[in-house]
Length: 296
Image (tube, rainbow, N blue to C red; front, side):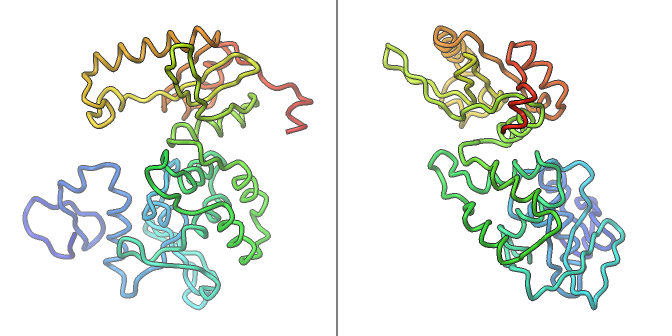
């Protein structure tokens, strides 16, 4: 990325800032490129916050309508926003910050709190679950609920406090993917019973299958499916897509011998609450009663 590239191998990201066309072709990385463009064009390093900080930290959230950049500025600088940049006036002395990927951002804990205060519940759940998950033991959690709670107490905020507490209480390190987190939030909001997560089911043959979600009381298994396990060689473990499909069929047969219902849905289904609602209702999962909703 640079201020004055030459040739057709660059794409204009922002006035006076260009990025290599190959980097811009990666749709998932465009948000970070836009943030870097704002940083590069600034006289002093901006303090990125909210969705921009989440992007730099690598947190998942629903990105529809996200601006180019969100920043925090001192009151004396003014909070005027424009050209895709949102500026919020705060006391910067009270903001915990650090540098990540060479960019000045709010701390991870502060970022999670800001997301929960300003974004829909499902987005907050996705970010919180990812931050406290250990990826099946393959990495250390990025933070803990205790650290987020300590940061929240230090800030002593009032506006949006209930939203933050709701996200903190709902966060679960067992959610292993954004799809699982989004689905779990949708299931809660739609009024279905909360499932148990990442449950291991042992069979008499000694084989153990792990399922994404299980409603034991209803004999119901839920699977947040994705196509990566068929397409990504790293996830196939040397097997062909056909072998993966056969193994998955055998796994499903084993599970159906233990539980009467097994329901699958994809990312696109979880994105549309009414679609996921219809899938689960048609599969026989009941909604909670009014009394149960009030009690949870």
